[in-house]
Amino acid sequence: MTFTIDGKQVLAALDRYLAESRQAGKPVIHQETIETIHGQLDLASVFREGGLSGSRLDRFLSAYLDNTTRLHHPGFMAHQVGCPHPSAALGSLIDGATNNAMAIYEMGPAAAAIEFFMINQLLERIGWDLMPLETTRRLTYDHGAGVLTHGGSLANMTALMAARNHMDPAIRENGCTGGLTIMAPDSCHYSVTKTAGILGIGEKNVFLLPTDRLGRIRPDQAVRSIETARERGLVIAALIANACATGTGLFDPIDAIADICQAHKIWFHVDGAHGGSLLFSKKYRHLLTGISKADSMILDAHKMLRTPTVCAALLMKQASCLDHAFEHTAGYLFHEKQQPGFDFIGQTLECTKAGLGLRFFMAFAALGETGMAGYIDTCIDLTRSAHAFLASQTDFDTPYPPETNILCFRYQGSDQDQLAIRDRLIHQGAFYLSSTTIEGQRYLRMVIMSPATSLNDIENLVAAIRRVANNF
Ligand SMILES: Cc1ncc(COP(=O)(O)O)c(C=O)c1O
Image 1 (tube, rainbow, N blue to C red):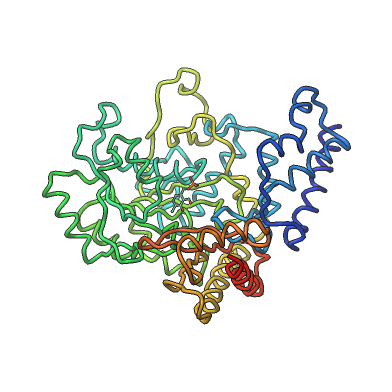
Image 2 (cartoon, rainbow, N blue to C red):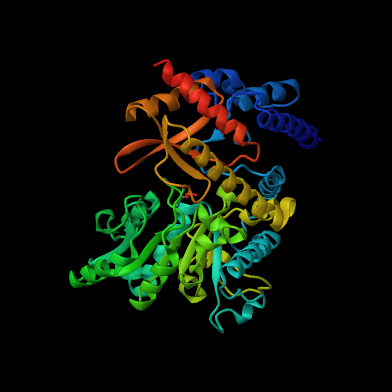
C-alpha cells in the first residue's frame, strides 16, 4: 500500500513543516537557484528511475519543503495568497485522488453538489436569490447564479464577457464592431485590462474613471465620465469597482457607484477578489454596503478564506446572463440525458474543471462560519494596530489608515531604499514584505495573512528594517 505508507510520510512531514513555520523555526522565504534546487531534489534521477518512497521520499520532501515560501510563518506579510487551513488542503488531496471533472454533473456529482451549495451560500450573503435546487425550475424566475473558477482573473473575465454579451447578444458569434468600452479606475487589477484585450474591447479602450489620490473612484465625477464616454459614441459594457484595490487594500464606494450604474443602466461589476470575503465578517461587512445592487462580483477563496490555491467564485445577480455563456457544440458532452443535477459547464471557460468547491467547503468545515469571520477580523484588526504603531514612529510614513489587512508604509529614504530594505529582509529570511507604488512613490507593503503573526512581530519587523537600513 504505497499510497497509505507514502501518504503518512507526507502528512507527518507537512505536520512538522506547519509547526516549524508557525514557530518561525525556518526562514519565511529561502531562494536558491533553479540549478541548485534541481540538484537538491535529485530531479533527473528520480524522473528516470521512479520509485520515490521510503528514505528517498523523506529526502525529497525535506529538500522540497526547505525551498518553499512559508505562508504560515509569522513573518509572511507579502502577498494575498491565502494561508490555507490544513483541513482545506485535505480537500485538495481528495479532489486530486478522485479527479472528478465535475463541470458535467455525471462526472462528479458530489463535487458539483458542493459547488452548488457554496455558490448558494455566497449568493445568500450578497442578498441575491438562490439557485433553485430543483434544477428543472432554473430560469423559471429571476435568481442568482455563479460558478467556481480557477482563479480571480478567470472569474473577472467570465463576468465581463457575460456583461458584454448581455449588452449585445450577437457579439459572441459575430465579434466586436468597435466603440465598446469598460470603465474602471486605474487602480483596478491588471486582469481587468487583460480581459479588455481578450474580449476584443482593446486594452487601451478601457475608460479610466477619475479617482482620488489613493486610487478610489470618485462618484461625484463618475457621472460626467459616463456622459463623456457616451458623447464620444462609446458603448459601455460594464463599470468595474474594487473591493478592494490590490495595491492599497482600499474599497471603492460601492453603494454610491451602484446607484450611478443603476441610474445610467450600466452593468456594475465588483472585483472583490480580496475584500469579497468580508461577506463573512460582521465587523467589516459594511465595506461592501450596496453589493446587492451590483450585477456581478467575484471573490477569491484562496485569498482570505483559508482555501488552498486556486478557488475563485464568480457570482451573478441574474442567472440568465450567465447561463450558456460558453456552451458550444460537442457531441460527446451536450446531448439528451437523465439529469438529476446541474452541469456547470455552460458557465465556464474551462471544459475539465477541478472540484474546487471541496477545498473551499473544507476550510469552513474546519473553522465554521464564526471561526472564519474571526480569522478575517483578526487579520484586519492587527493590520490596523500595525498602522497605529508605524504611524507613531517618526522615521516611518503611512500614507493612509488601512481598511483591510493590506498596509502600505515607507521607511525614511529614497524609493530605491525601500526596495533595498525588502531585498535585505528577504535575504535574512525573518520577514517577507511586498512593495507597490502610490502616486508614483515606492512603498513597502504588508499583507497580514498568517494567524501566527502578532503585534510583537510587527515591532520586530520595524527593528529589523532600521537595522538593515542603517547598514546601507
Ligand atoms: C483585486 C484583484 N482582482 C483579481 C485578482 C486576480 O486573481 P487571481 O490571482 O486569483 O487570478 C487579484 C489578485 O491578486 C486581485 O487582487
